[in-house]
Amino acid sequence: MRNVRFVITLCLFILFGTHLVKAQTVTNPNDREYSLQTPQGIIRGTMMTPGMGEGYPVVLLIAGSGPTDMNGNSMQLGIQSNTLKLIAEGLAQKGIATVRFDKRGIASSAAAAKDEFSLRFDDYVNDVRLWIDKLAGDRRFKGVYVLGHSEGALIGMVACRSNTKVKGFVSVAGSGKSMDKLIESQLSALPQELKDRVVAINDSLRNGKLYPQVPLGLQALFRTSVQPYLISCYKYNPIEIIGILEMPVMIVQGKTDIQVPWADAELLKQAAPKAGLFLIADMNHVLKDCSVMEQQAQLATYSDPSLPLNSELLLLLEKFVKNP
Image 1 (cartoon, one colour):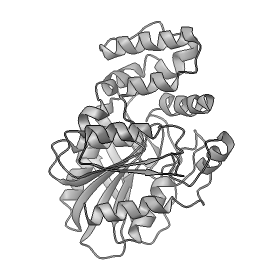
Image 2 (cartoon, helix red, strand yellow):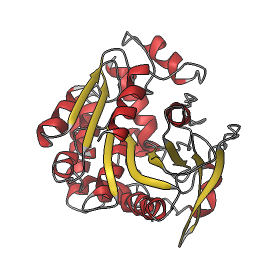
Image 3 (tube, one colour):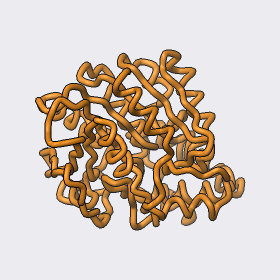
């Protein structure tokens, strides 16, 4: 299972937001384009509402790492789970609006791309802050909530700091470790020589210094053009950030997640004692039902958009948004 975790994690981290993903076709009649203007270009999104009226609470959905589109899919990684699209559809049925978006450089937001060397974690954070501002100023909505999935949880919680426009924050499958520690733990199956080199590289990046002599076997993850992004990301520790959020917080984690262990959710809870913590027994990283940790059973859920979301997740989200 360690090898599975390594393969999936490596793919997620070596492919940052500068690669293009095929956009998904919007078919829901209550879907409409909802875009954000940034200095680098337009970030395009989709607003889904329960009906054609207004006055709904709205949840901003933030995708995880890698070239993940607004629906939670990544063709390059073989992920077609429709995770975020299914959340949007499920919440619409419960009277809650959502906005989801292609990250800058991805699919319909390709025009807002930065070159890989110039991309920073804070670019994603600032984009989310702009989305929050836009939603808070939209009279169709009566309250703004933020939900981040995987790395999107860290992006979301940083964007929510000292932000009085947000009524509640939800971390779904969010890590309880800083990115450098997460990488080291998930590469623990490597030979000792490479593990030692990973620590040495991370020590350099933690101190804000590029590491020039990356071994060939680690180039995909630590290539020079990605190192500035990692430096910008390593400075954020989710344990420190979630503990200072002033709005209601909910932490949700599946116990059969092979990418983020459920113990991470408990670390987040310890840092934010007032937060609600919910561990869902048979939910995996793409928020589908999967009762086993076996590789093939897990991967089958990553590539089947017809599988429904875990039903308990949607009930928890409904309750939180309507009664934070």
